[in-house]
Image (cartoon, rainbow, N blue to C red; front, top):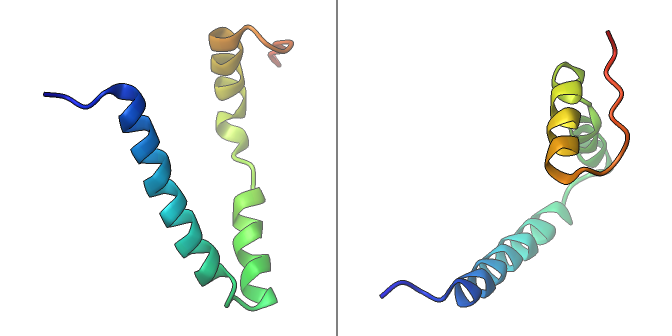
Length: 70
């Protein structure tokens, strides 16, 4: 018998929280240089896909103002 979707969601959240705590503990030992390098990678936007992803988000949610550069 398959799990109830609500119970499955609760379990997934629990597993993600465990992983987040493990990552937080590992991240705590990083030097400032390591943190800067890692955050720099997270903050580097991928402009090649930005327009396509923005349009997909707009189409799915209907939120925002879609402006496509031509």
